[in-house]
Image (cartoon, rainbow, N blue to C red; front, top):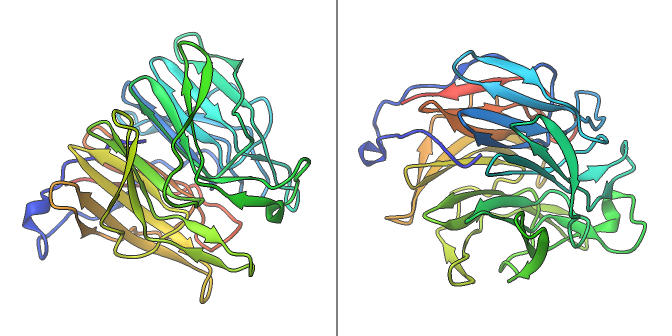
Length: 322
């Protein structure tokens, strides 16, 4: 999930850039999906279908063949599932279960052996959670933010709260440890790893007044020092966005907003940590939220999502090349 194409950022603003083009759509519509890459393929798990029902789907995309294939499904339908690859193992971390209005965070972690093609149970999350960022650094998975239950048996969206909590999983020892909290509690953010540091951008917060407000904050965690830092915020506060990284730059795509009125973003951006600045990319052809993103074979891909704020889903996949 955290790789992307090389774009001549030094020529911006005013440079002519290639536009997004459609490629093979997902086998079925899906939104609120996350993913990661391994050996030139992209993997995505779970999500909502176009009727707002959670799915147990697990799929791989091959950019060379421009084709999809199904993997053995998850043990149960889930949406907002964290996805990270460490070595040859694909991990499905937490998420929510239930057909809305049932909305219950789970602590279940599944591991898929990419060489043997089989799922197994892995040590569960310390707390149930969904809508989080998961990032693999140094062979460990860092699970950051999202939403966690406010009480035992929480099974509605409003029974969960935004969190700044970080938990770190070591697949070698099978142990979870507590990391330092992020500066900002938020959900539906996006993330990427640059030079061993985890960047977390955008997302949203659910206030006590019931309002859903996007945030533009950009925070960076260094596992080597255990410290968080604040960087230049996104030019626009976008929640439910996706992101990818290549050659030391972070790319962010789309999202949704509910205040002052529900709408979906087409805007895409690139962040250069060398200058601590953001620059625009071409807008997505299809404005969407709840997507997942990757870079494969020198191109950016944005997968699935929904074209209206809230439920619904599309199978759209778009690619951007320099």
